[in-house]
Length: 441
Image 1: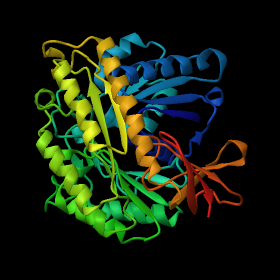
Image 2 (image 1 turned 120 degrees about the horizontal axis):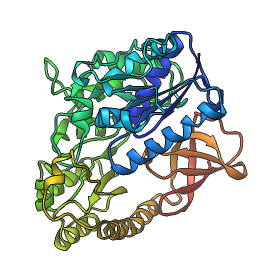
Image 3 (image 1 turned 135 degrees about the horizontal axis):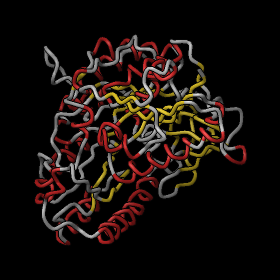
């Protein structure tokens, strides 16, 4: 069978897609990169917020056209969208031949076989995500990112934020062992990977569910010793579980990026309480002060939500003042996305969407000025850049340790003879709100 896979949403979804590809390749299926050539299409969906749901549905409908114009026999929808809406989505998408919940990724090959043998004309699998075995270093995987790799260190989430559906979709937090993660990273580095990006729903909670209990600091300590020439980066942290050992471990190792991705969601104590976030502004100020005291050049990234139910103008001014006070290097802002299966849906005083959009624009406008100011400190300095691709006009494009893949700006490099996937020394000569430009040193 010729199979095409489409991956939507976050880096954790990308890992799931790569694991599905690995299983299919191990089963001697042929992976194609043009949907018009595919006999089977698998769409790994995101269902976190309304925009992601709509993108998933649009992609499914678009790819379903290949039943009319291409060679497509079976369309399979996997991931968070079917897990969230289950039978409702089954009835609303007759174009789809099978639905796979988040606990059934390992059954993709069996589902395709069932469809092809006509034993199931409309199949839907919703196993409990808590019962799904975690991937191991031996789970087949085909990466889609040649020079860097996402490594999922845990699955699920045990927090109870009122705006978030992830615990329902992914189950409770379950960590992999340090030994297993290290072995996977060793193999990735042996294959030529130059950056390991650790991901989980709450990466800073890593290991607290294991027996004996461990933590992200211990994991980072182990991974840092594999190779001094490979970057290690952590994404998707949580302020409440960012402990001192994590901070000091990052400080102690040059190959661990001093990059702290800590989504706050808000800075008003009133809103944070309604969100179910277990901290307040004084805690956050102390945390960021501690990070910058231990690591003066640390990069701080966060995300915020505007328009959360009950958010007043005063609450908004608090969060606006907060970002101008802390001055994050990178910041993303989402408009609150409401669904009736969220606890936050039942909160009073929902904010009009136009108000939420206006507030988002205000925050992003302020952040653009802060980001430009932050980038200016790199002018005429020489930085290490991972070269990732050729850009327009013969330029190269890469990232520094203070730029995470896919979410931050890039480094444009003027120079010749660079090798994609290698590190280069680049002197920064020009900066913008997000991207920076340099020349080969």
